[in-house]
Image (cartoon, rainbow, N blue to C red; front, side, top):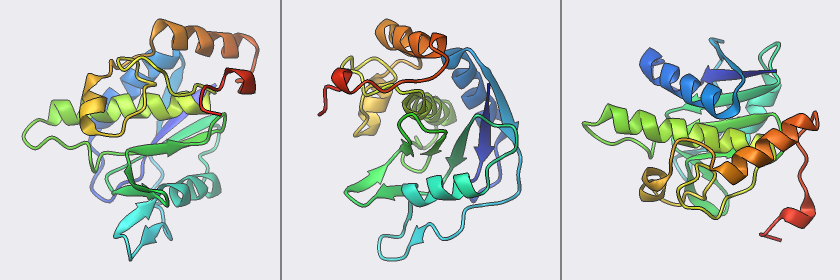
Length: 187
């Protein structure tokens, strides 16, 4: 299984940023992460009324331009993302799906590139966690905790808490990720 990490932003790809994201994702999911360097960039995702890009549109675009050999793909961008019911999102993923997208747009800390990259890496692990079937965690320190603000992102650790790690490993041992309705605290 390989996760493909793909810079799909408007600015030039930053090797250090992408390297840190790759390292965090590899550590969290104990799997190979490959950087995909496809030249394509999303189209048709910009909403002129909101002056933001649709995260769902980005997910659809990722599916349409899927990198060969990937079991999962994480698109990393610098454009501002939204969902119709939210003002903005740091990212979005398909629960038990194979695609996720994250944006650095609202994670930037002026004058502190290391903090910006740490935030982006956390949100990358978070969104990919959803693709593996993980739900939001009640522990505010777990990387799978809900993030409604940058402050919440800063509170989180860059890794899965023990309970989420156990769930992830269980899903992997079963040979697939399984969303269990009876374990959903949000229904």
